[in-house]
Length: 70
Image (cartoon, rainbow, N blue to C red; front, side):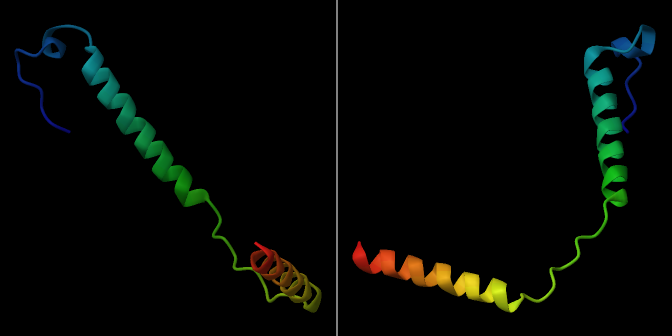
């Protein structure tokens, strides 16, 4: 955080809009960083079942057929 000069409006009066906005952005960034820590790690999907492999092969064959016809 940078120090404000003594002639800055916030040194004598209430917080100006720019300083308020900068402060709220720092708070938001801090909250988002903290929230990211709480997210669970994504587990990798397990191996495909025979049914899932067969379905993918069927869909690939269908797409290959459509590509040949085009």
